[in-house]
Length: 357
Ligand SMILES: Nc1ncnc2c1ncn2[C@@H]1O[C@H](COP(=O)(O)OP(=O)(O)OP(=O)(O)O)[C@@H](O)[C@H]1O
Ligand SMILES: [Mg+2]
Image (cartoon, rainbow, N blue to C red; front, side, top):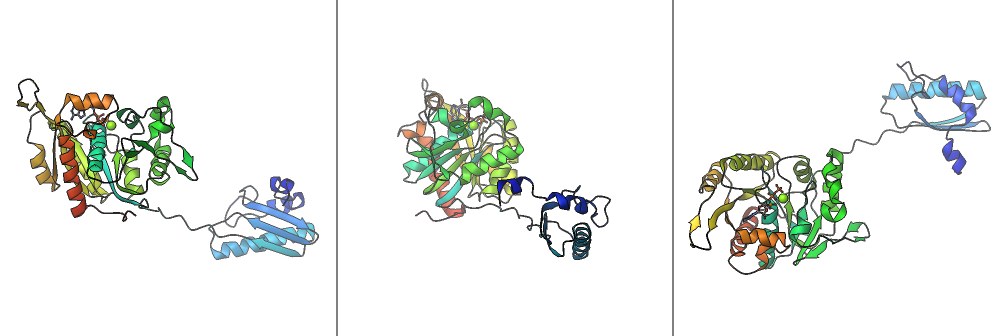
């Protein structure tokens, strides 16, 4: 077909007769309804194709009859070939699909902001790596990505290889963050459909394989990102982070409920900034109170994954792009223990997506 024909898919001689054909039961003709996708007249042969319509058989028959009659009368064509395609069946939502070559997907979530999810995600990932696993971390906080800074990879630019985006390698982890892909000022304007597309691409169009664990650092709350994530990928088990204050606890319950409501398993809750070990007096200060998360876990029927102290060194290292758990000292210890515990729970109950080759 020539370019010209593409631009004018309906031959002029056929326009007028087609305008006289009304869609059965409607006051509109099929041209006004933009129902004709192509109409050609060559000699006494007319070839007409309509756009796909979900019409019952009697309506199709009526349309065929009316079109043939109008075209024959107006043009004298005797050979009329008419096609009315059936619309494609509605695409079922594909549902969560595993990421090939990734065994466990572990989102780190919290109802409340600023409780330490990103810090914990990255240190948990480092802890799991220290246990000998292949680990990736995906920063799904589209609104305020943390991974470029926390991993000291602010200038990293992922390459595109074939149809996949290549991960960045930092501290032995495979890393992807929207922060590598879009300028900071743009991150604030994500809206529903864009969020869905971004989350899907970050999960399914990045070369994650092979991984034992993919840790997902989520934004706070239970918004579009969280919902899309649970629709896009089977969650092996979520880690919910809270601080010991009552307000944070109430939000932790919401976080757990969100995963349960979509049938995604919860690995357990971590109490972050649980206590402060004073380096001067060497005693433990329970600044926000303590001991409320474990009973809450029992009440919710989810495992208590442990507590992480408030440690200024953790914060300092994060700001320098060096995760505390990269070392093997007292600052790393709580995260190494957490990683051990998370791995235990994953092995017992986590839903593996695939064996890693
Ligand atoms: N165990 C900890 N000890 C000391 N500081 C911590 C600890 N965990 C997190 N922080 C500090 O608390 C602040 C908030 O942490 P982080 O950014 O990880 O929270 P978040 O839950 O990811 O926040 P957001 O909801 O904004 O994504 C950071 O400055 C971080 O360094
Ligand atoms: Mg964060």
